[in-house]
Length: 189
Image 1 (cartoon, rainbow, N blue to C red):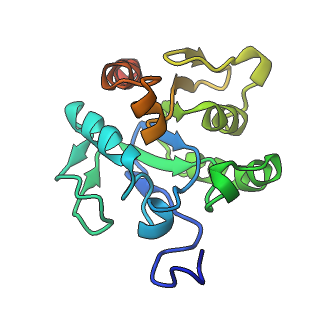
Image 2: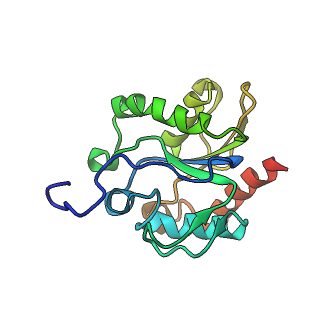
């Protein structure tokens, strides 16, 4: 990808948002034409519009999402990180990539001293976040809208990933996504 697009970010994508927040949103991995290009999670691809628009409805953003890393958008009380930090082949991380990136995910979550709730976007994010938070996966089955209270004190909320594919197929509607985010927000109170 670097040879074909030397002007793109093409590197491990760092987290984005408020390290002092109570909410972490864990995505899958940088999208080829999204974060791999822009250097900011969920920026520049079809998933960002739904994600940032929904977060705005709950007062978790300042500014307007312009699909570029320099659009001035700020996250409030939340941070977005990915289970896998680099663009995976065919947009499907291997188990080795997930294992290799887990320490980075753990570090991102540990760097949030007020973290209470993690919203996992998709099954891979759910598995990686669950393990990073000290959960046991057989006891944490992924299901859209599921809320898992971990013995470590964190709460893991599941949502289908807001990918363009999930949106176009109807697997995830804006109402379904809004409900999952609402569940996470309600847990803060």
